[in-house]
Length: 357
Length: 250
Image (tube, rainbow over all chains, first blue to last red; front, top):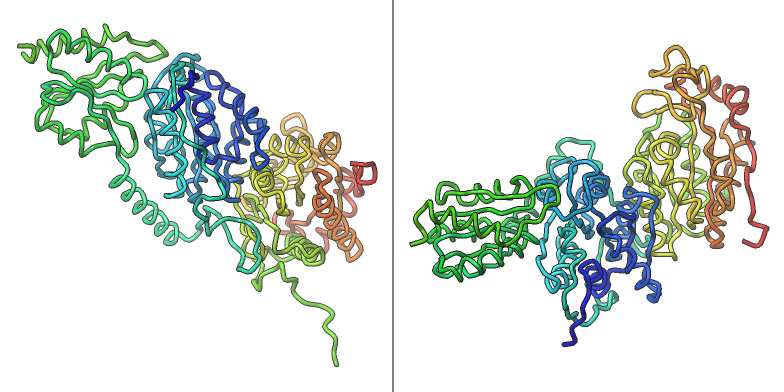
């Protein structure tokens, strides 16, 4: 297969197009502007595709909501402060059970923060983010090629579960250029038919897509329906990568760009003779709880490494319970750790637990 | 044999309106439904209701309906229309929805010249939440948040959204009407029809602002509410066609 050298944001945009995405609305924000720029040009040659540069993040997510109601695969993208603005719409999309793909190329925060790579939106992404106790599937790519597969998978997951899916990257994922190859484009006309869309009442009764349930009992029943859907997603869709974990006595847990750095750290530690591996969650929600718990049969000490002050570490602790000691190393605010820095933390902990002998 | 001269429009469901006695919404629902029937577009029309008194409009309109968050109706409608340009898409919004929390979505949908029809019901108060000040509340008007009357220095001035939208290059038809008398109701129906035809002819954005009575929150009888519109409200919001460029080669 032919490989192309592309920056991550362009990879996302191209993969979305090949996944049959035919509606994109977005608002400029660094460090993800290459996504709308690419989409505007790519869609210009597709007769059935719509690109809109919206007047706001709010408008963009609501346009995506409308396009999804009409049955089209739709996406928006932004970076942290912009995602906060979109949360109202994401809550409605979850409440209306609409498919949508939302890309968050995270930057340092809180507030306006900066434009450097960060993982400070883990809580926001994995806990729904907006009001009303909904969930979003969260996918965390760590390489250019994985941006292809996970972007395309995001649309399939969104359609099959009729739920918003977050592709959670960061400034580094978006800017880094790597060689990637793409599968053949999907023809949107050949995707499974949706029997719930708003496309006119010809030959059928009128349809309604809404999240309003004034009767508390009805609202409760709908929440239980969502709960069953979320349970099914948790059961089926958790995904992770085990890297050099065979025979490991110590494990690093990291996702996205942090996992990429951790791989370097693990490689260096392995070269120094340490028995260490990496557990990398690919889905952050659902979190690969069972798989991580299974690892504690052989690994009793874990280092969680994140580009924040400790967010995923809570899910790691919930997963392993008392079965392993959990430690944390993180850098917030857009500072990127070097593999050497993480390697030193690994070495120190393995020395303390006498795992280096 | 008797000839049927009056019936429920097909675009209206056989349901009893929840609106207060004397409220303008019921009339405006019916007019919109009649227009949809007369234009023969019921089977390809999608409606987007607001948050506000008309949030349950989908219980009455027998067309496909998609909810929007408060104020975002024209953004949601933009998504539907652009995804399926063969559909006829209308929004139905109150003054708080379209002229306060949704001002940005409204102006930019108009300015992009979206092929959409907006029905803007202006009764000068937040009705469903209990009668608070709206962007369109008149100077001196008492509401639950302007109990001593709307004072511009504290509360700002009444917003003339339709005038603002008329300035936008993408708007083709903007009209203000009322539903206080048989004559004004017929004029409103004509305006709504035109606003749908603008979309059917792919010309651009169309909006009808309808001054509507809210006896409950105005604390007036139905008759006095109509009188208030005819004698007082129209001074701030004059009736008539504000913009019509349909004949100018759009």
